[in-house]
Length: 231
Image (cartoon, rainbow, N blue to C red; front, side):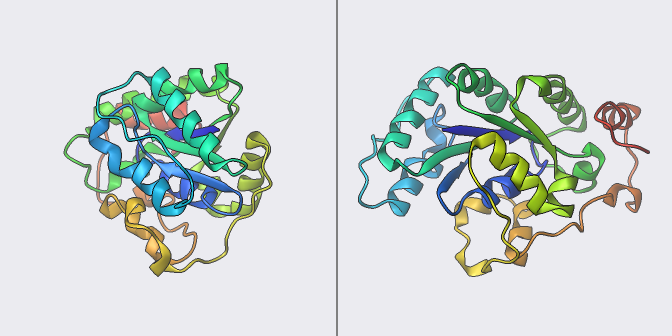
């Protein structure tokens, strides 16, 4: 098993999508701990692996430990194929030490928070809250097996995925293009994710904050600097 994640809207979906091929399956926020998100977990696996036997989706909230146990059962059902999941924010941080304690790799991806904030935020996300989560995940980066930048992923996908593959113990290659028609709806949770329908990796959203007619709080600029991004 493996876990990938990071702050919300930091390229986690793109990374999960790029990993979800060859001998690897990466679920996009199945949130096994939260039964309200069941549609992104076992039903997805059953569609992809109709001959495998999976447990029934949880009907009650579970601890992160129990959710990790649940993923392990699913991993056994698809073996020898490698199974992982992508999570964001607090669930990612909550699962990470459990995965590492079991010898399962954890990879984080981060992004310049100012680029994230250029687009209108979802109702449940605030600039202050996103800053706080970026700082929490950045502060924990040395506890992960690897962390990468979104900017590097889109600029040098082959090299970046090779690093991710080394952390996961898998040989990974970056697809140059893909068919937009083959993208499952589970990947397109929000309008932000529809860039995947472009059929290839795009760097058009790197540095967009510099051209945007938008101001950011001093806290946001400081978060970016703390994470190694220049003005």
